[in-house]
Amino acid sequence: MNSNTRIALVTGAGSGIGRAAALGLQAAGYTVVLAGRRESEIAKTASLAVPSGGPTLAIPTDVSQPNSVKALFARIEESFGRLDVLFNNAGINVPAIPMDELTYEQWSSVVGVNLTGSFLCAQEAMRTMKKQDPKGGRIINNGSISAYTPRPNSAPYTCTKHAITGLTKCLSLDGRPWDIAASQIDIGNAATELTERMAAGVLQSDGSLKPEPRMNLKHVADAVVFMANLPLDANVMFMNVMATKMPFAGRG
Image (cartoon, rainbow, N blue to C red; front, side):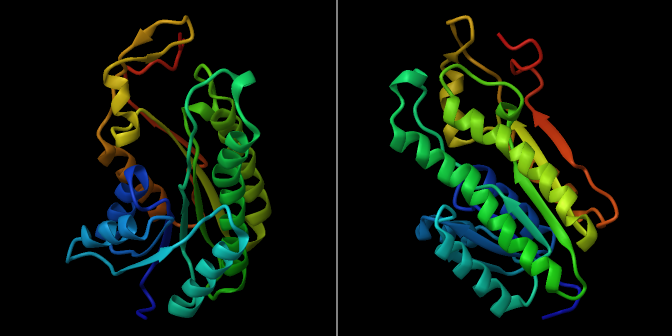
């Protein structure tokens, strides 16, 4: 491996923000490890890589399962011997239903992927980044506008995204002696399959249904690449990139 090659891992790389960020990093010259539960979808992401960019390696992974995460990082170490950037992106949600109607299984599934999965991947990344030479690296967590303020009927998702902010701060503090920088990107209304419903109208805090503006997914990918490219002595700890006219400031 070329000593100048930078290795990036993107979780949830089979769709949406993960796919866009992975392809952005690949086009910028990173060797990109594509992790996701659906093998066919991470393979599709790999097929979209540009010839002028870096190589890709697709590894089916369930980030909510410790053994799956350990196997992912063992494969990265075996293949590349280091990791420079982790984009902790994998996340799920459940339908917007009143909190008292949520099942334990729904709650646990969101916590398992969004929070525990991010912790497990960050933990393994820190272990790798501490011992590699040169040491250090960057962990970028995918937060959300929901890391600041909730939408109606969104307790599992909102709670996990608030917790991601705490995880980012802990990673920043605990990684400091090892040149491990921690960042969080909080995204609002990027145009993905999951946000298509916003064009027809989504529930607002006053009970009304209103359509919401969305932004091109490329802006998110560009932001992730910008954060990843910073030298380790500089950091964007929190970045909010959002559709300008979405309801956030004064939401509802």
